[in-house]
Length: 159
Image: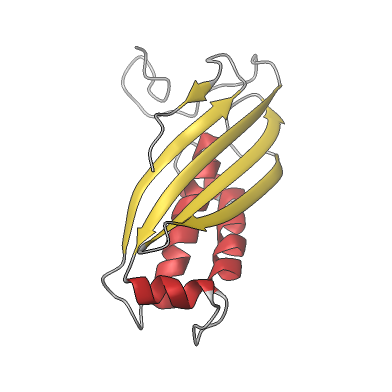
């Protein structure tokens, strides 16, 4: 498999997407924040002293998606048409964060979806660290993607 971010001499480069066709693309990513059950309860009840962690994390994730090209070297600045962040939990000690992003462009939007859930998860940690420094951010992954030359991708189903 050819590494597209390296030229023939092994030097880093931004991939030339000039000749690629514009297609509609989506990407869904997911992250898990594991915490004490009482921390999750307080998040879901909006009982944190810092405020509503989920709304703050949602905004942070969307903002991060829009700035991915400034954070990840050699990433293209993609015109994001839609970005959403949703939350669910396991009723015990895990908060799940899922992003869904859409664009019509010449290259994929996977990095933006992954960045969105990563920053949203870190925001949850920041909002809750005073009561639970042992939280962990886990299992950041691409769940699915559509569009582009490589076609669709569906990751393995996990909890």
